[in-house]
Image 1 (spheres, one colour):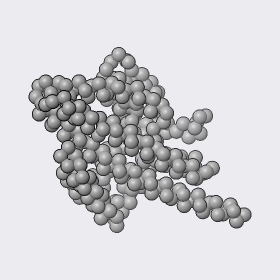
Image 2 (cartoon, helix red, strand yellow):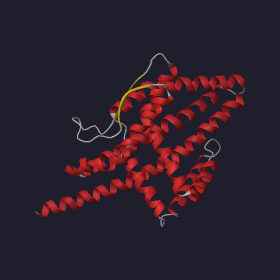
Image 3 (cartoon, helix red, strand yellow):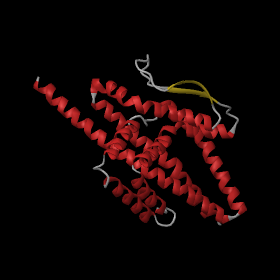
Image 4 (tube, one colour):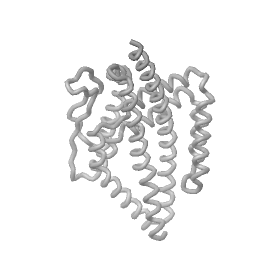
Length: 268
């Protein structure tokens, strides 16, 4: 394997992990911010209502990653109301900055609400609609971004088509409702982003070293590894897109509410 292919594999791996997480995390955060602002003075109340489910998922995901990467949890609040600074929840943790594994963990801990949220959504789909999950999984498994980008995107869109074929079932609406609560609290705080950024270089370094080792052992191993990373990326892409669609629907609802509220105020 030549140097150009090595670099291309590394870029693809970074794009389908780091790139996807940061891109969708930012877009969903912008949608959520506009959603709550459109409710004006009632935005905080709406945040409390949706936060009953969304905030424990958000903070619990941070805590889970802390445990996986060996960080010590020093304090945790899964959900609280009427705090002095308006914080609904938090996870405080400490780690050894000289430990590379724990340093990489900073990235995953920071973006945990986005990653774990996608996994929970997948688990919820499996429990509520196993038949739909099987159809979706078949399409995602067939998506091969390394060989055919447009064909892979076609499989992702086909998976969406399967989703809407179950719209008449009550399970689909439960899935949508719980997904909405999770999506509205996937927003990464400044502390989340700061923590994630502190681990990005360590994450990329480990990825680069892993690629180099695989090339030394056998060049074909790197291609297989990249294929596995892209397969995981396809899985994340599909569920991130579901969250994005939910966020856009909720955003549209909030604009409708603001328009109705504005008309009422103008009449009085």
